[in-house]
Image 1 (cartoon, rainbow, N blue to C red):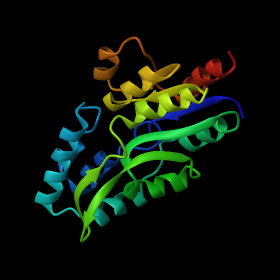
Image 2: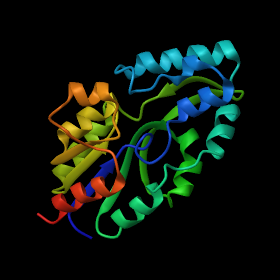
Image 3: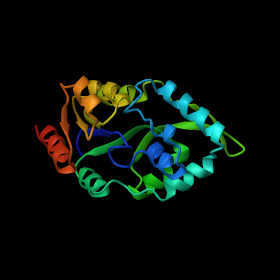
Length: 202
């Protein structure tokens, strides 16, 4: 293994967006909003928590959706190839209470994420592991003399991408690509792999 770490977002990069999948299963369109739409994470989560309470959606309801959620096509193969030559860390703003089935399907890569506050199977709040954890994780890796490549698709990935030695957007919406044109944007895993290898073999 080298002194290179690849930091990847989870939803939209390796797995479908959890909240969009929940919205589709419950037929609640208000839950379709993600960090692709709302840059302020607390604003987004308060919106979600309000709807969950109003519609009496339980933690187990969401977990049942995630249990049957497939990975994005080619994600596992991409991750397996990547881990053959460098370290990979998933930096996500999802929650440990959601992520286990996805991590199992990915072969249990390292994941840094947050936690939910639960009472009687109801999601009452959330607790960030730390604010701006993606950015701070990348900066910490660099302080340990790792070179860091980062990839993500949403507004909450931008600070991580800025902190990395090299970064690109992966399947990002047009709004993000337009607002941050200085990041290269790719759509396929083979393109993302090329960007990583070009960085790795410099």
